[in-house]
Length: 210
Image (cartoon, rainbow, N blue to C red; front, side, top):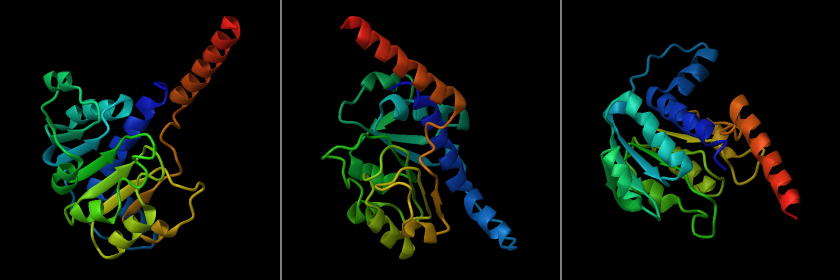
């Protein structure tokens, strides 16, 4: 389970930067022959909300340090307050994160408790210009609710790497400021290689123990 974590964490950071600077939007516009210079924000100057501070969420936190001192709001079912020694963390409720964060990044497993965890109610709690990222599991964000909220002009961006049904062919592709990727979180050469090695080692361990 540790093997893909660095790659997923780096993709989450990449998506934060893309959303903050609208590089995905500018790319689409330039391909259409449109020249628009878009104002953005810097990662070190905003409030980042992390829901799920485990293998991947913790790595995302560590990587934010390279960009300055964003305000860090975190939530986890098993808070690790020792992390406060390394970061200046604010352990808060999910509702506080949705209300106050400029970017919300989800790092959760898909369970009966997290299915549709983020729906219309939560999305509308967010600031009108806030952004949300999901690199964890499809089904945690209700995709139809996200589509409706963004079509109404709420949220300045979203980055979704995982979907309830894959390959994805839903309505979010109609929204230019919604950055969509094809479940690429673990798709770095080193991490995929490590995943295969660890899976093989585990199979050998199981056979040998029998």
